[in-house]
Image 1 (tube, rainbow, N blue to C red):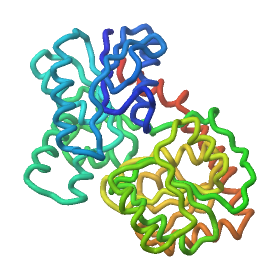
Image 2 (image 1 turned 180 degrees about the vertical axis):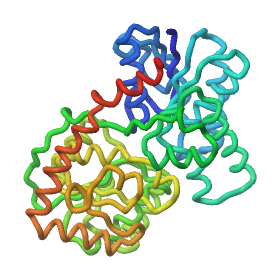
Image 3 (image 1 turned 60 degrees about the horizontal axis):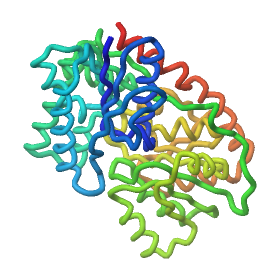
Length: 363
């Protein structure tokens, strides 16, 4: 088949799990003999023999609404330049223009959903405009030939929304487990890490509030809409054990994980956060980093309390601090979580998961 793969996430350089998941699927489809082209934000025109048509990257930090609309229009216009048999689309922002296009030209669409974006908007505040976007997003799910999701929680929600269960396939997010080392470098104080976005759904402002109660160094990699809030908390409360390092290349992020004993997931308890696995969970596991996470349903699908994770009450910085301190004091429990998390990560190796996504595309 001639297949166009599209996403709003960058495929080069990789920033976040969406681009990595999409790129690996494109490369697997090429390996199987299909003619594949990627339309996505990229600084390269070819990746491992696959042609890449670069497109505007919508920024979350500037004007998310304008960026999303502009990206959708640019993608819609690009589709007229190429003929193909099927589209593999990551997330609804790219799928909305593709679905409109394929209603006209009758092509197969496979939607790979690691998030339901409008549910994040609803979690902030609902209004008429968000309801329109939400209708469009669920319309894409209904019109897609097949839908790939990252949790049974997400599948169950889509079935309740009227999407046919038989066309929904659960393929969890993955990790390149072999690219991470479980060996830890010696540091003065224990190191606690959070990496990734700092948007409202990530709950990062909770971390410096918890850091006040912990004798350890906290490293925050990444950025987002709430970075200023995090900085103001650090400054206002004179917190000295938290460092904000901004976005770092993938290789530097892996080096930071080699210093960290504990990795944090601070997401609040909202509907969209209960539907998804966050890539940082799997990267913490892969790097032998013990995980302290807010208790969320999709994460509970794959993690075992006291064996490879400790949960805290979402939004409760004191409970987060208590769980961190428990691990810092109980070295045997810390080592247990680190060891079991590393073992668990191999069940989520991309080498196991990407072929499952490619099978859905080919079916």
